[in-house]
Length: 253
Image 1 (cartoon, helix red, strand yellow):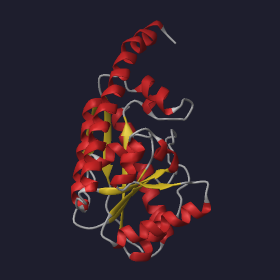
Image 2 (spheres, rainbow, N blue to C red; image 1 turned 135 degrees about the vertical axis):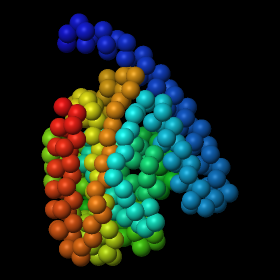
Image 3 (cartoon, one colour; image 1 turned 90 degrees about the horizontal axis):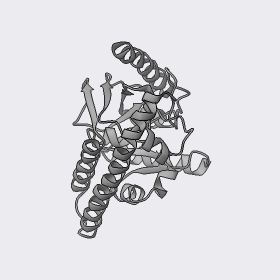
Image 4 (cartoon, helix red, strand yellow; image 1 turned 45 degrees about the vertical axis):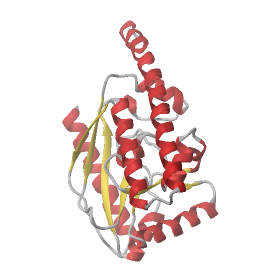
């Protein structure tokens, strides 16, 4: 580590810790609202709005500067699929989308976030459990049929490579079965060091990476696609995502 990098980290770490405290306070306040409205049997739309305000507040506290481009259907349920760079990706997207995100089961145990997620519609899946994966596919199908969009990361975990890793077919099969459109999109952090490679635990990764004043992020939505063949949906989505990642990186680099 150079002297300049060490100096930058010394400056950034206190800001990251303060942000963690701010996120904890913001999430605690939101969880109280969620519990209160749950007891009042508030409509689903109300819970979506609370969650979106929470996500937007998170973006402001973190100093995330997000640029959105492309369009997507807002008047019909869709399956939103994306590359996966950080554990924060779903929160970034929920500041924009009204959808049920699919998340790894471990997130259920995160302080505050896990409990709030359970109460506002996050779908948790244990990737290593066959029964959990099968149950999740049934839930996805049910929610799509009930008119709810789904946000999923087909790679299953974060990836730091320049192209996506293997996509899982399950969610595409559900979309093909019921004829819903798939919306591919890309999320890219300008600084590649913000990708989470799992070398550090999430808390240390956060401290190291998000003490910066701002974090530029680009979100690009692709054309919605429909097919009764899940492999066609998977291949076309992954091809568009890989190509768009390259375009975004060229713009920045």
